[in-house]
Structure formats: structure tokens, C-alpha cells
Image 1 (cartoon, rainbow, N blue to C red):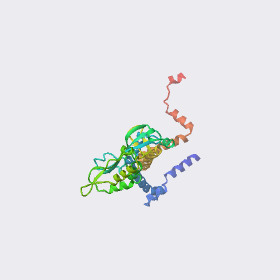
Image 2 (image 1 turned 180 degrees about the vertical axis):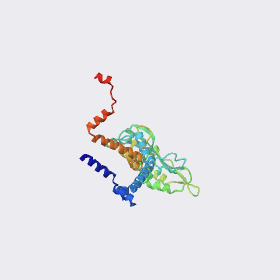
Image 3 (image 1 turned 180 degrees about the horizontal axis):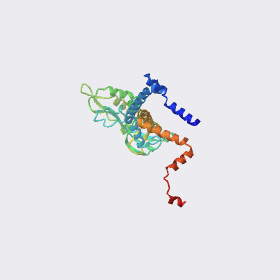
Image 4 (image 1 turned 90 degrees about the vertical axis):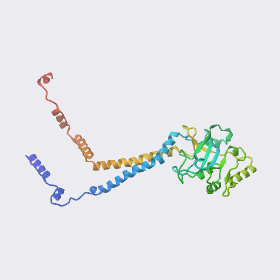
Length: 332
């Protein structure tokens, strides 16, 4: 009897209108909770984060992801090898600059270019320095190979500075590069060349530029080179560290770091996509009733199964079994 009264009281309480229902019946607006108030603002932030993450990933593909994948495919040597300067050409004109060792701006056409070729050896540069080896004792694995500032051969300041690159790995001073850049030269020709002849102590061929009055003028670099060749009979061969590709024998770069490449690639892929997936997941959970309903039903079923009495589970399974006939009972 007491159990019946308790069940009746619970049923009556469940039929009573709650505070929110009473306020709605009386025409008073129900007070929203804190989560309901911040939900539109959070949704706006999540939507903006998802859109920006996708746009940032598209921006990083040509500038970070593709170069990093190209470096990994090239399989550069982990330790720098030994390179010797073979030839350095500084040319002007699009027809002369069919390729460039360094270019500031990967999407812009250059009218002046540094073309550096090297001979590279598999001997580590650290061993070359420690043993005080001479360039003549090295066995060259590749000769007259194009030397690039990186895999793409281009970049943007301040990370890539072609004047500094040419001064470090080529055979030209910064003052001469500035002089050449100041010359308004409409003709297409080579402005400077340093090759094997100079490394063997022979004077370089004269480089002539056409002046404003139509006469041919000798450049300051030519005069300086002739003065040096007259005083010093030999010019030391320029040797420096470089990274050769084990997949492409005709590719040599000035700088490479495997760990930095992996970190850059992982960060460029994981961070934008993680933010995008998390933002879209939360938004779908909030604003897709079908997904939310299925999630809540599965959650309630799981909780009910965990909290259910084992005896009731056995009874429910036995009740679902079909009734047996007399013949089946006789077998037992």
C-alpha cells in the first residue's frame, strides 16, 4: 500500500509543470543558462577558426608543404659534403637567366641572375677540414652541377638574400654586385664570369658593357681581376660545404636540415587540420539534431546496460526466447 502511494506521488510530481513551463504558460520568458548565452559567440569563434584553418592550410601548401616534401624526396645527405666552385656567371636578361642559383621571390621573373656551378665530392666537409686535404686529392662525384640556395632555388627576404649568397659561394664582391645592379643595361648579356681559367691562375676574358654614348667600356670587375692576376699568379680554389641529393645526382643545395624539415611539415599539416576538425565536430554536435540524438541514445543505452541488474537481463533474454513444444521438452 505504501509503495502504491509513493508511486502516485511521483506520478503527480511528474505531471506538475516545471518552473520554465510555468513561466512559459504565464507569458514570462524563461531565463537562459550561462551555456545557452555564450553558445552563439562560441559558435561564431569556432566557425571563424574552421574557415581560417582551412585557408591557412591552402596558403601553406605551396610555400611550406610542397617544398618540405620535395626535400624529403630528394634524400639529401645528412652531413654536408665538399664542394668546389666550378663557374660563377652573373647575367642580365630573361633569355640569359633560364635558371638561377638564387632568386628573391619564387613567383617573380628575374632579369638578373647568379648561375653557380660546382664540383662536389662525397667526402664530408668536416673530414676535409680536419685532415687539411687539398682540392686535388678529392674524388668528384659530380662536375659542373647546378648549385642552388635551396631545393626550390628561390625564397623571400630576409631568409634568402641573393647578394649575400653570391658573395659567400661565388667569386664576386658585394661592391661589384651593387655596381652591376645600378647599371641601367637594356642589352641581354653576361655581366660577370668566373670559371676554371681564373682558378688555374689565368686572366679571365674581358667583360664589356655598352655605355650611354655607344662605346664599349671595361667594367670595374675586369680591371680588378687583371690587377689581381698581375700581382698574384694563382687564385685559390673556393671550397665550401654543401648538401648533395642521393636521389637526384644533379642537385646540390647550400642548406638543409632534416629535423627542421620534419617539424615544419608536421606543424603545417597537423595544426590547421586539428583546429578545423575540432571546430567542425563541436558545431555539428550542437546544430545537427540527428547526430546529437543518436549520440544521446547510444549514451543512454550504454549507461542503462552498465547499471542494469544482471537478473533482469537474464529474465529479459529468457522472455525473448520462443516457447518450446512438447516434443522439444521431451528431449530433455
